[in-house]
Length: 267
Image (cartoon, rainbow, N blue to C red; front, side, top):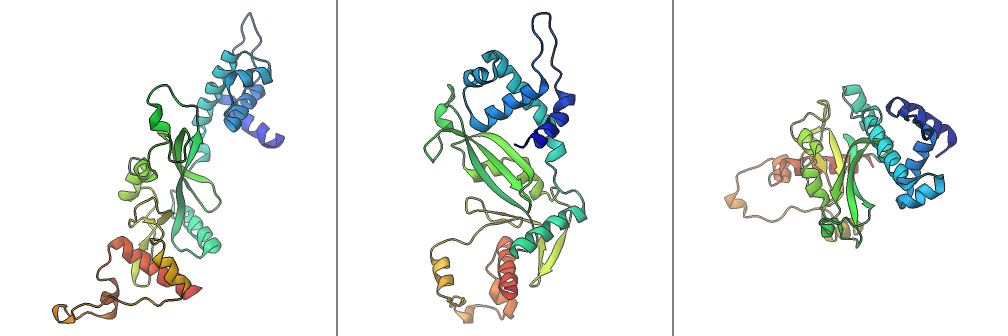
């Protein structure tokens, strides 16, 4: 972290950290407290190693770390903000579309594992599929890679989709309160504000995920044109072209197919 950035962070944390002066010892300066915390967060090293490096006691290093972390959590609403107005969400949508060509996207969702020392209680819950102990952080970022929302602390064994389904973000997306009401008609389908995610998540009207892999990708590479499955037309009612294409699709799949058609048209 550059010195200028470090100093700005210290200024931001100053109102929340009040070093106590005692008759025995001078308080550890604010800048040193922040440096101790950043070093610990960056390397996940033992507290006694941090204490030796900064010339303080191990218990002091531990207390400082948690004090500064608590102060950092109070700054969450200063730096982690979801778009609350139509112009704010439209700016993110425009940013994503300019970068990727993907319309109506206002966030990218994924999880990441943060290494930890195995806890004494229920350690197997934290043993992840990659073969090490961790807690799971799930974050939603905008087109500038800035967090709009995050959820941290879940045991590493948890699946990304489960963490999302239990999150406040999921509830707000479902009830339509996370983003302001914005939509766009694409290929005859009203597309709401969307977030994109990988194949670990479920396809919904608010979350777009990749198509199933293997045969889809193979057909795309071979430039195989999509063909409707054969059906017994005698048992089917007469349908127009649009109904024939979308009749068997869920609302989420309607949205995804409209996006595919739009992107293919604009390539």
